[in-house]
Image (cartoon, rainbow, N blue to C red; front, side, top):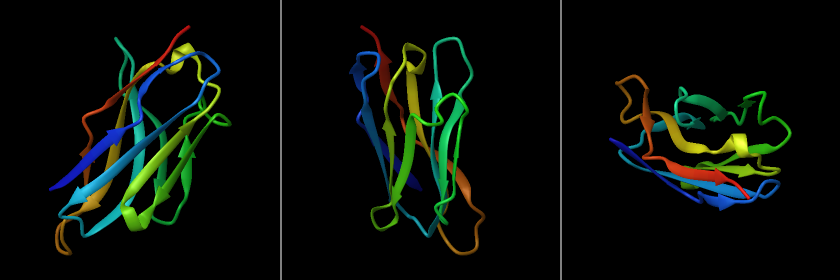
Length: 121
């Protein structure tokens, strides 16, 4: 199995910044992509940003120009730098990894436990 541990959430004022980190550990054969999703109360979970093993990135339109995803492949860690935060960014942020645990099984999705981000004055 692959374990994902997130950190860096918290309370921040509108216009502020936070940096989320997610470290993957366990039986990792390869990681195809890592990303961040979020879920606000009463809403469905949505993609925030994703980065592939080739460092290709994709962002939700709502965060483009404000959030930056990056990856340290040597540490199996993904980061999400969040700037110019807005109250509507308030949500539980979940780390996701698409990974395989050995050479003969297909990749599957793994999830972290989530970290709360609250943007409020």
